[in-house]
Image (cartoon, rainbow, N blue to C red; front, side, top):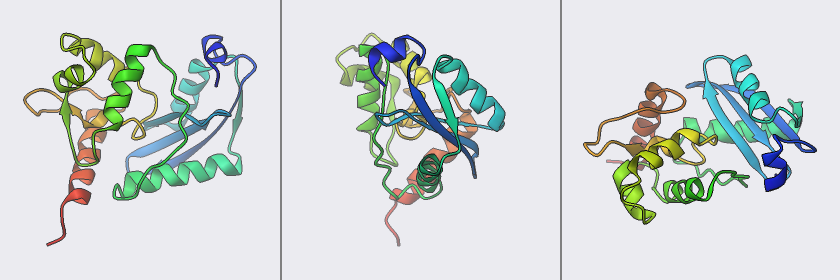
Length: 182
């Protein structure tokens, strides 16, 4: 999706999407012509579809095509078995600051964690801890941009757009997947 198209709420853009189920609840994966533009998790598939409509009210939304279903299966596979690699073409849209935060998040390895403060330092904005948290909250690409790997400075879990319980479960699965087999 081009920046002008994004700024116009999806005007003249076609977004394909599909809904599915995984052990964490419902999942929606949406694709623009450039790549995956949304991966959302929740309890209610209708709410996930409404959220997509709210994000791109002017876009032509096409639900349930075969290719979108395949992308859902790929993302669900990663959620269920985090040792699998999730290599998706992404269509990431946000401010320059958000882009820097999200790029730093993608460098945290599966099974790893970083604090909001560490991310702020990594992007060269050590005093922007709250802004880092806000950028994490604005992320619309669950698991592809792993904001679930960001924790408080003391290591405890804090908010997650799709629920702290899902965040804890994703971290647990990644930790188990990254442990060497004994």
